Image 1 (cartoon, rainbow, N blue to C red):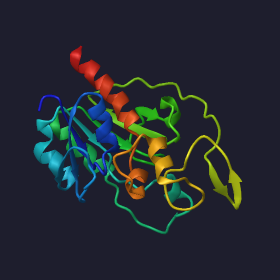
Image 2 (cartoon, rainbow, N blue to C red):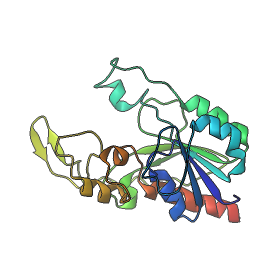
Image 3 (cartoon, one colour):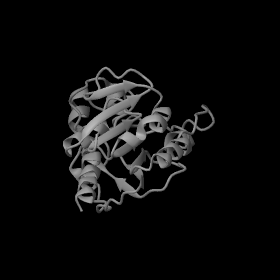
Image 4 (cartoon, rainbow, N blue to C red):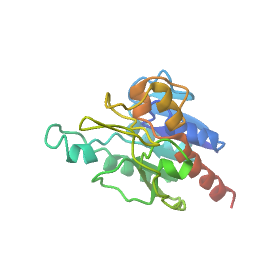
Length: 218
């Protein structure tokens, strides 16, 4: 598997699809069943799988669920829930493999470096969807953070606001139809709202995958 990418904590495959589009063979791992995952899928605890098999892959991408420290958890939901912090244990497992790797997570107070920040506007998408990446053994150029064209469409305090972006999470609030979410994210192989909401746009990891490919060829 010299050109294989392990997509750990894979969910429905937003990250994995980007690496596939960049020319890689992709294998997804998740503790939960993922019937809509579009590539080879193994149901297993992701960190344990990385420890046991990570060395067999050229590159390992991880998206550990980390509600702890999320912007929403620090604000609206502050103190309501207690979540496990999986980033440190994931990093430890990744470093032990000796392979290049990425940890991806959302905004908030997270125990990770911000080596790269990607926004949907950088790729002409209908979401802002800011996501941060920490890398090991890989360097990816930071694109310019283009000025947002407007605000996110939806209701705020009972008032409707129009805008070029959709809020791809939660329910209500005029957040858009499933088809609008699919188009905004560039995700069309699943029509399950929860799966789309928990994914990242494939354009993000396609961008990373292209630089991974260039590093490999150099």
